[in-house]
Length: 570
Image 1 (cartoon, helix red, strand yellow):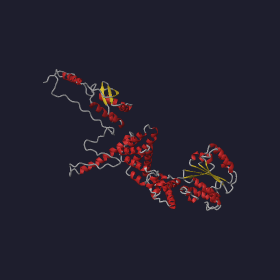
Image 2: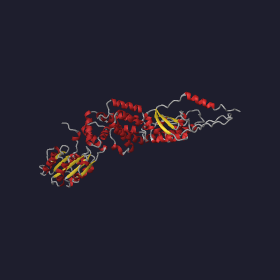
Image 3: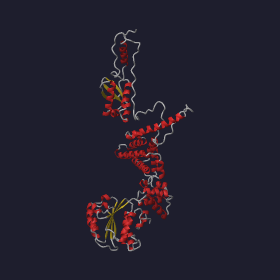
Image 4: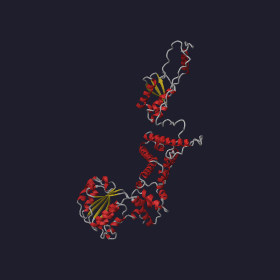
C-alpha cells in the first residue's frame, strides 16, 4: 500500500528533525540526564515538527536502550509506540475532544500506572481548541501529576491557551524552517525515492512550502505523480500556478506604463473566469516580493512568497525605484480592501490599474510628487541638450537637437526651444499671471474745443462685460493661489461681471461642486474685487453664459460717436 511521502519520511529520532536544533538538542540532553518535565507545550506554525518531536520524546522516555537521548527504534517499547499498539502513549485531537467530559475521563484514567512502558504519555494536539471548562478540569492534574505521567501539548495559536496552563508547562517555540534546509531535504528524499527533481524545482517547492517541511513533501508527492522531470516549469504547471506568468506579464505592462496593454490583458483574464480580487491579490504579492528583493537582496530570500522564480523577479525589478514599488503596494492594498464594498468589482479593478500605470491620476501628494519629478528630469535633459547645441552651433547651426530616448521609468517628452515650457491644464505646478494689456491712449491730434466729460475709468470692466480677456486674466491670477486639483476645473468655467456681482458659469454639476468651497470662493472674490476696484459678490451657476445682443453693440457705438459732435478740430 502506497504511503504519502510526509508520513514515510517522518523523522524517527531527534537527529533527523530539520531546522529545530535549538529544541531537539535541549530535549535530547534532558532525556540523557533523566531530567524530563511532566508537561511540555510545543508552539509554532504547521508542518514545523511539533507532533513529530512529541512522538520522538514519548519514545525516548520509554526506550529500553536510549542512545545519547535518542530512541533506539528497535526495542519493543519503541516499536509498540511507533505502530500504535501500546495504549499507554495516546495521541488526542483537542478539536474533536474538547468537552469537559472527555478531559474528566482522561484525568480519571491517567492515575493508573502504564501497562507496557515506563511513562504514560498524552499528546494533545491543537490544545487551544479545548473549552474553558475542559482547561479548568485539566489544571489540577497538570499541577500535581503522578510520577508515571507526562503531558505534551501542541498548538498553533499560543494566545488562546490560558496563562494558568502556560505556567505549568515547559514551552518550546518551533520556528519556520528555512527554504535552503527544505530544499536540501527535498533533494535527499527525491534521490532516495528515485524522483528526477531538479535544483530549480526544489528551490521553487521550498519557497512554496512557506517554512513547513510537511507542505514541501506533499507538493513533491503531487509533482512526482505527474511523472517526468520536475523543474520549475513543471512545478508551476502541475500545481496550477501557471497563471503567475500572466500576473508577471500584467506587472510588465504596469511598470512600462502601458495602460492599454494592461487593460486588454485584464479583460482576457476576466473573460477566462479569473476573479479580479484574485488578480489584485497576486499583483500585491508580486509587488511585495519585488520590494523585499530590492530592500534585502541577500537575507530577504526567506521572506518571499515563492510563487515567482528569481529570473522573473530580476527582470521585473530592474530599473524600478523603491518609491514606485511602495506606491504600487499601497495602491493595490487599498483597492483590494475596497473591493468588498464595491458595486462593480471589474470597474474598480480597471481604475486601480489605470492609477498604477500613471501616478498623476491618484489626485494626492503622490501625483504632485510625480509631476515635480517629471519637470526636474525634463529640465535636466533640457540643460544637457542646450549645452550640446551650443557646442555644435558653429559646425552645424541648422542641425536640430534631439533629446535622448526616455527611460521606461519615466517617459517625458523633449523640452521645446521656444516658447518656454508650458504644461497642459491640470498639470501645472506653478502659474505666473499674465500682465493685462496697457490701456489705449487717445490720438494726440484730436483736441476738444470745449470741456468734455472724462471717460470712465478702465480699472474696472463695465457692468455686464462678457469678454473673455478679463475673465482669463482673473482666472490666471487665481491659479497662483490654488492647488492643482482646482485649476483644471477653473479652466472649464467662464465668469461675467454684472454690476457688483461676478457670475461664474460652470459646464456641469461636477465642476460646480469642485469649485463650490470656501477656499476657491475666497480667492475668486478677492481677485475679482482687486480687478474691479470695488467689493463684489460671487454667484455660481450651471450652464452657458448669456450672449450679448448685437443691437446693444450698435447702440453703444452710436453713444460713443455722439461724444464727438461738438468737438472742433484745429
